[in-house]
Length: 185
Ligand SMILES: [Zn+2]
Image (cartoon, rainbow, N blue to C red; front, top):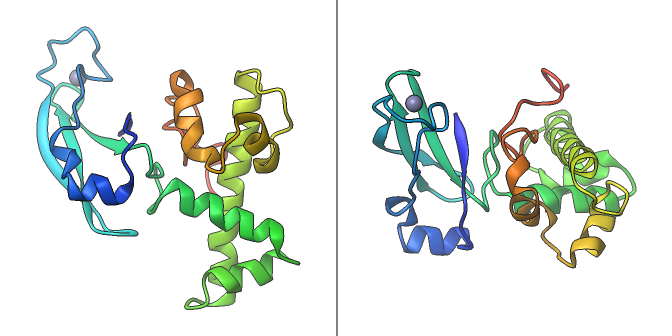
């Protein structure tokens, strides 16, 4: 499973400081009461957009490894929240999703690029709708209105902070809960 590791570091600083070495979990997310043998369990690698390591714990009782995902990274998707947000911004500024997809991912087939983009649009839409239902954001669930409401250009990263208590139930890529739907086309 993945849990949130709260940090203000950028990806570059996280790498430069090898911050995964300091990343720390106080208790097992499955057994807050303790007694499960929960312990640090090395690291694993993330390769996009740059190679870096993620701190990992292991709960023997739950037979579960737990990765500590820093604020700038997506849950359950390679890459950063800023990259996802930027892709959706490009889609909104383009004449069509097809045009945006080819602009963003010229190195893959148009069909694959469109799937890649639509998955990200879906993740952002699911996230904003869910957040708007959980906390009084006072705006419609669009990136543009969230940017205005929270006075930030980095809405998804900001949500890790303002929707902190809801991260375990929020859908990916901001949250660590289940996806809205089992699969996206
Ligand atoms: Zn445990």
